[in-house]
Image 1 (tube, rainbow over the protein chains, first blue to last red):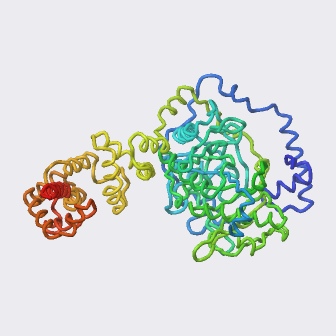
Image 2 (cartoon, chains in turn orange, cyan):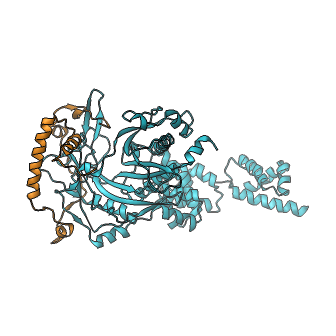
Image 3 (cartoon, rainbow over the protein chains, first blue to last red):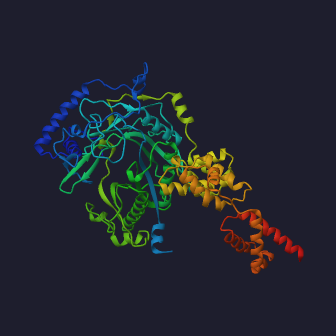
Length: 99
Length: 523
């Protein structure tokens, strides 16, 4: 199998499966066009990520944090954006293994 | 040879392991929420681990150190710089729609680098490590049975060390040996609590089968949902039988992910084309014989994803992390003596029986008590005995770890002195009358002796009682004179009975030896 190319119908179908989206042929064509345009824009950008050596050059930066517990959100706030709730959690349609 | 053994003997089992070890940090990998088990759902979450837009992850220094210590313990080629990747997939327990993991610049091994190895404790075999990397855990799903599921994100963002081996294991026994060895190493490193029942150590087995003697690797199935050591052993045995049944029927296993179902007895192949289904009767005949009948099966979950299905790309929210050579050296030199090395030292240098050496190194903390007793000049054999018998039994009864022991090593050493001194206190007496008071009342052994006036039988009493038992047991005396040393037991028993267990058996044996010498002299 080759890399997924979202500009091909097969690539769009595979991406839709991984994203658990059911696309009809019309939508698949439209998404293919959109993705193709987006990819062309992205490809026109210079590579944003330097290699590891380059990224690590220069003065050291403090990028780690100490292993200390900080207060969590009250559950009410954690669940504020939940479309539906049940038993203290976010309720979602069941996705069972293998689906 | 049974038909089962004949068929299975034509094939070789090949197993590789993928292990997820939750690191024993206080807080999560990229945020300050507490790491824990259980509790009300969604009470240990924040905007970072909920995946809210606009938040940024900040790496936990302790998790970073722990995963390096694991890689160094295997002797892996550890990188001087590491970075993270996004692994993209959609599942409701993954709030961001991607997992922060490592694919290319992982901590140890991978990409052709040396991953190190692990020597199995029982067989001595070396298992090669492919790589060790750091990643975040997902949340948990509770299926409601009404078409809905509840998402609990308390676990989301917990630091995980993923440890991947080469397919070097060849039997269920070796898989078991691997799990025990790795558990002991992780406990010794103090990087994981290793409680499978709490999900903080999770094994996945990649199983394939090939004709015995073949060099190639067959297509492998990855088995998930293995939540106990027994489940791993049974699932691997089942999968071996299933794949052999397929090959025997001229079909071939395929690369796929299967779920272990511990309860069901019937092979279940929904979603698998008939040509790829194992014949149930043949499969059943190849399963190990188990009292009460075999239970458990693997069931098809999905065809295996390829790495590109996850569309990995470098994590833009985290910088690369350099590890200074001095830091690596500091981690390397602070590694504890690992259980394999410690066990070998106990057996070879201290002369302990293999079983005692194993028992002392199996539970974290027992060896520390043992080492302290050695430092207090208690001989190794006696020290091992105190730790593995009275102390371990008392800890088990109270549900305590060795670190929480109510009796300090100093008091155990004092107990040893009390037994060894010529004070009439036998070992039995000390353990029956002194030990419970040391345990329950927090007294030192000598304080317990003084407070309760515990004393052994006087030497005169022992001599008198032994002489009486000698006279009352002519048959035992005859046997002793004929060289049957075991016959002394009857006399010792009689003396103990007479003195209500308060005599020191060593004193009784000494008197018996005198009586024997006298009797022989008279003859």
